[in-house]
Image (tube, rainbow, N blue to C red; front, side, top):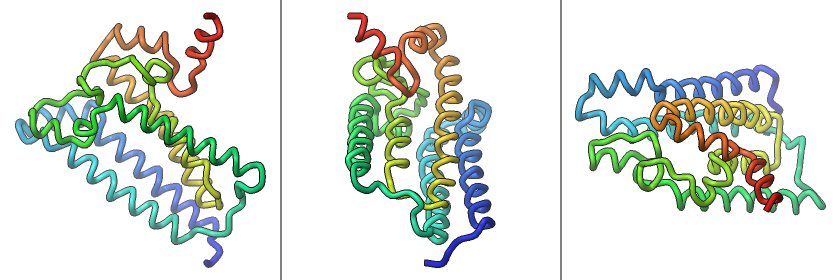
Length: 210
């Protein structure tokens, strides 16, 4: 494995940032409303197209990162291996609990094709759900991804990629919530007041008071 250089990491950061920008732009309110008005009935295919494009374009970023990958600068060794296992396990639990609340077919875009109706909420009902893990944190899948991507052996390219994606997950959460406030109004604002975004601080405070 050849040592990578500064230019490689700058290119990787730009590729990752470009992916994040496109991902956010393609699902933004302005773009989706414009396409909804101009595509008519064909808009029901947009979520599936969006997911397909996101996966294929992300593959380009990941492949490039693998090509410039070098010797890890941080290894989960010794007692740190236990912490790594705990972080990965917690990430997987959060993913599974979140999957129990989200509608996979709606997330993939299959329900939209079948029903011809698009909802910004990816829950089973298509409405705001604040039960279960969603009553502990508002974005269990985002926290799951953050835990899993950092709980691995990290070389410089991995750190660069994780830093960009971590920033985007936090920014993406805020952007997504702006859409949800637009859709659910005071109902979602009340949810924001009661439940923390990523870290279960409010839930822990409430549990300690009981």
